[in-house]
Image (cartoon, rainbow, N blue to C red; front, top):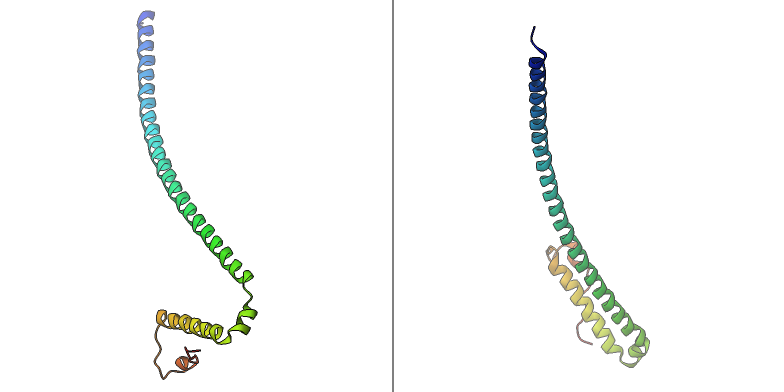
Length: 134
């Protein structure tokens, strides 16, 4: 039989080998965890950049909406301060000519932006031409 010292040394070597194996396994695992953490950090940074871009775009849209609201308010103030009935009674030809010209410009722009239809088609004859002179 072997002396107890040898058994103690064998036990110590087995324990030491187990500890070294466990330490190597933990080191490998730690490396994998660090790699995952780095990739997640990169993903978070990319996401933060995209969020910043989205916030900037949202701010631009909000600024454009505010400008549109301001313009709308100014335009509505013009209509509230002008008496259109009075203007029509004072100069009926002038107002009518402006309405007709605006009508013609509007539908001319719509026709230009849409697919042109042949002159002999029914769709082309639905719009009545209006005179442009008062």
